[in-house]
Image (cartoon, rainbow, N blue to C red; front, side, top):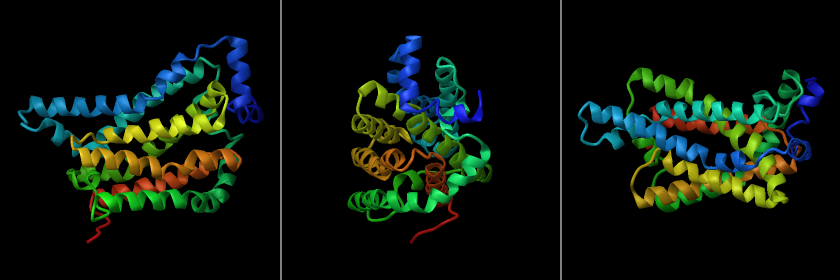
Length: 263
C-alpha cells in the first residue's frame, strides 16, 4: 500500500465503499464499542484473583491500587482486537493514524497548541464537575494507587503512552469513522463514541461507590468531549490529540505516584 493511499483508507467514504464491496458484517464494530469497559473489568478481576489466592480479604480493592499497571492488559487486548478488525478490512493497525508518513505525523505536531485550546473548555467543565463531587483535585483514582517503586516507575514511563495511543486508536482512529458510516450521521457517531468512551472509565478502576462511579462517568465524558468534535471539524488529525491526551494522563500518573503533590 502506498503512503498516499494509507492516508485515505480510514476515511468514512473509503470505509463505506470497502464494507459495501466486500459485504463486511457490522457486528464486530458494534461489539467493539464496549470492549475497553469489558477488558478493564477482566484486567482488574484477574489481579483481584491473584490477591485472593494470596489470602487478601479485600482483593478487589487491593487490585484497584494497581490500576496504572494492570491497565496495560486492557491495552493489549484492545490492540489484539484492532489487529484482527483492521485485517478483516485489508488494513494495517498503522493505517488508523491516518498519516502518510512519519514526517507527516511530525508535521501534525504544529496543531497541538490550537487543538489544546479547542478542547480546553471541555476539560474545564470536567474540572468543575470534579469540584462538585470532591473538595480536592486529588480524586480516588489517585489516592487509591499504592505501588512499589518499580510499579510506580512503570506507571509513569509506560502506562500513559501505551494507554493514550491505544485509547485514541480505538475510539477516534477506528470506531468514530465506522460509526459515522453505520449511523449515517457524524453527530450520532460522536454521541455514541462519547458514551462508551466515558462509560469505560467507571472500570478504571472499578470502586463500588455510587459517588465515585457517577463522578467518574460524568467527569471523564466531559474531559474527552472535545476530542472527537475537534477531530472531525479540524482536518481529522489524530497525532495532536494523542499528544494532548498523553500530557493529561502523564500528569495523572505523576500525581498518583507522588511526583506531583497538591495540598
